[in-house]
Length: 87
Ligand SMILES: [Zn+2]
Image (cartoon, rainbow, N blue to C red; front, side, top):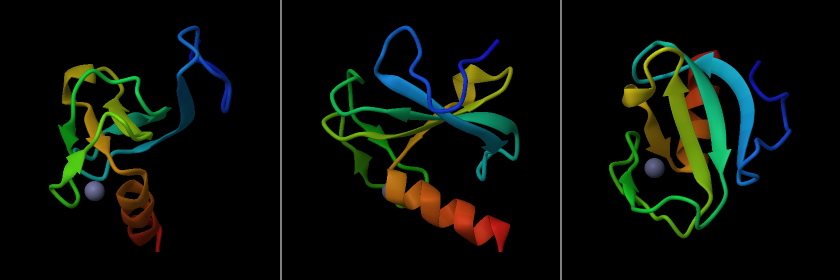
């Protein structure tokens, strides 16, 4: 069973927000929030192509069954894209 919405996982630093369609891959994905300082490197946001600094909290989209396709997003970018998709 995945962790309940809004509950922390055993690591205590990531939060499953919801399951939604990844705007990039189109796959059903887990939308996970990672708190600042809990990734080991910076990532490139797939929306704005700017760095997602490891020192900031951000969103990770993990396609169900294809965790290798996960992408790290700025929280603001992800929310913007999700809003556009749902209109
Ligand atoms: Zn971004």
